Every structure is written in C-alpha cells, then in structure tokens.
Amino acid sequence: MREFQPEDKDEQQASWRTPQVERLYIPAMLPLGLIKKLRHFLQRRRVRRRTLALLAYDDHILCDLGFSRGQLRRQLGQPVPRGIGRRG
Image (cartoon, rainbow, N blue to C red; front, side):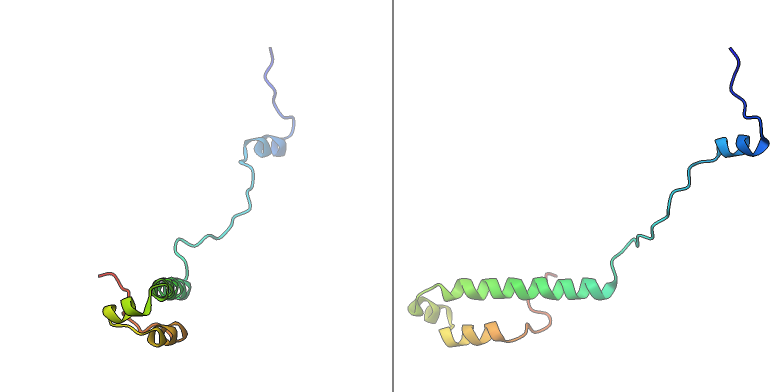
C-alpha cells in the first residue's frame, strides 16, 4: 500500500501542525481584594450565626453567660471588629 502524501508543500506543513486552541487567561490566584472581602464576609456570617444561636437561649441562661438579649441584638447590627474570630 502506498502512504498518503500531500501533493502541495503547504498541505504537508498544515497536516503536521497542532490544532490552534484559543488561549484563556486563568490567574493562578484570586485577586487579593476579593480574598479579603470573602474572608470578611465569612467572618461576619460566623459571628452572626453564633449570636443568633445565643438568642435562642432563655434570659436566665444568657445572664449566666454574661450577656443580655439587648447586647446580642445590638451585636447583630454592628460590624465585626478586626481580629475577632481569627485563628492563629
């Protein structure tokens, strides 16, 4: 059997080329600002969930823990101070 050989030199070069794939830019790391905002969002959500869990307790138990219902409700409306909830 005879092997296939392109008649034209351009066809021969074209047959050996790898297919052209569109290149996408994918950064190796997310932007630092996005990471910072995501970290703050998760921290705020964690504090909010813990505060809501405390609000489910009775007033006497909250008093034993050193909290009042008013303090916890105010805590829900305030931003989280920096350094709270950080793991070291």
